Image (tube, rainbow, N blue to C red; front, side):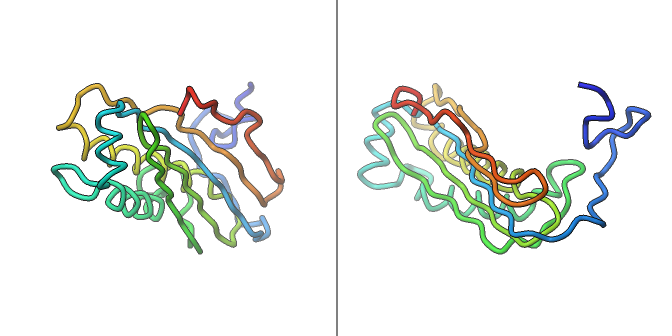
Length: 167
């Protein structure tokens, strides 16, 4: 990959913000995912009550993911601040952990992939934080973009869904 093919690097190799001033606004949507492997014992407790010693893990993680998506431009250098129309974070307790799926939408000149990824990542970190006193072997894994729509590059979807053993 050459320097000129990287959108956030100028011809001199220096970081730069992409100029989106001439791009037209389109409807943008992105979905992302993360998985927090807790182990069966912690997952059973969450499946029953949704709570551990620190409180309601699922709802706290949902709120933190939404809040994080709204602050993506403050957290990731060179991201444009976006007026998000919607951010949703879904958390599903599985036999071994929590599967997190996020979605971000806006009408804009640049995509919302980073907002969806930030929502999933921070929700996963919140699950970790709220569960760490119950077990130190918790692992956050499989943070990835699932799909995106809109913009010049068009629609994209992950080709390989996670297998049951990966969630």
